[in-house]
Image 1 (spheres, one colour):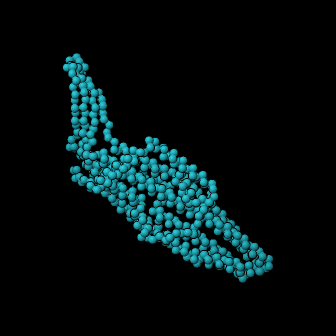
Image 2: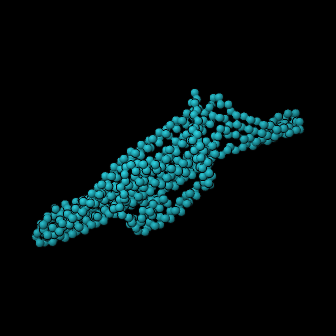
Image 3: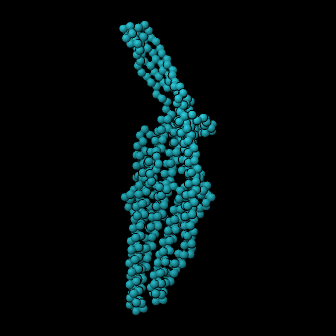
Length: 443
């Protein structure tokens, strides 16, 4: 049994028509060859030439990513494809012309010979409704493009901070190597003066060698961080270069209420889901309109050879909606509308869930950074300086010095990790929780 139809609300219908008119105009301007977009994209890749220069800024890296990341080209192509579909959806059916012959051989004549022209007349505003559906698909594709652009930029920003941290860890490891060398020299002087045993000297050398290993590990970590950043930029062969930037500026503190309000108001994921609801509503109206049959009109002119006269013909026909009233497609469209409405709710709840986790990591890391910067780091540095001076005077044994060195290193590492987590959390929250700059996006 056919499901009773429900007309599209007037406001939604009007909104759909506005979308259709706007998007059909945009679609008429799309390039004849989509490769033009690719050519423009590749021209932008010339920005990557700055990669060989030291002191790259975040803005420069973002420009390189926008010019070279392949997922952005894919997103542009999907928008162009949707615009092409939108343009096609509003085109009227082509007329039909042809030859007709009838009663040939009757009375030994050629019968009736002529030509005809036919046209399918589309009724019930089907073309406008099809265009409205396709127009909302364009809107969805545009929101998906915005989301992908944000994903790429967010990942570049996070990777930029990761490389900055890796640079600092290399510098910290080099400082520890220098401290270790000083400890070996001090242990050698004390051993020569017979103020410490040879064991202290051996322990100092072991620790110095260990710090060399940590420096090697830090350099490898820096290389890996840079390679990940280069892959995101779309320039995997880019050589490591110094980055111009500071880790210490963590910016104003974010609040939960403002972050949630902004997320729900500006998220392109949520906007895409809402456009999906409008598309589904238009699809229901379109399928309801499809029940009204189109009219086929045909007219022609023939020359009747038997009576030697010209005659005209007119034919009008339409299918009778007795068996097929499009009831299956209407039922499917309404089901898809219900699913689309629930998708908006699902996306909103998922965003709240992701924000809760991101905000917890951000607030924890920010508080850690504040305490490390205010108390723990200065105390660790002062402690190391006092123990170093005391060890040279023979006031402390080497184990005390070793403990102070390792504490200094661990505290600095924890501080840098807190900075990285703070910046990553800020990027995630301000970047509307979008990430995955190289992940394959849905079609």
